[in-house]
Image (cartoon, rainbow, N blue to C red):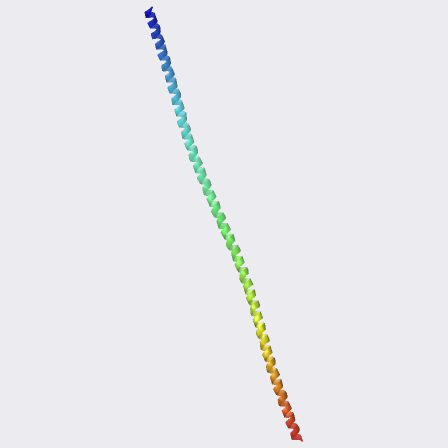
Length: 143
């Protein structure tokens, strides 16, 4: 009896140990599968991350290029408009200078004409005086 019980115990222990061994083996296999898939997933994620970083860098370079080109175009437009404003201001200043010069010339001409008129008036007065004196002198010589 005891032998039978012992055999049964041994048999159960053997089956139990074999079953546990098989379960441990299955568990180890499952863990290795999970590890392999995780490693593969990590590698795939690293590759995706690297691709994403490269894409972001490419995009950043494009944005930088577009911003630089926009800045250059804007600077050129500002310079063009500034030059137009400066040209317009120079023309207006020249016009103002021309008007000022014309006004000065007009004043000088008026002054010159007034002086010429005074000189002519003085000469006419002198001629009239001289004529009157000559007329009197001719009249007294005739008498």
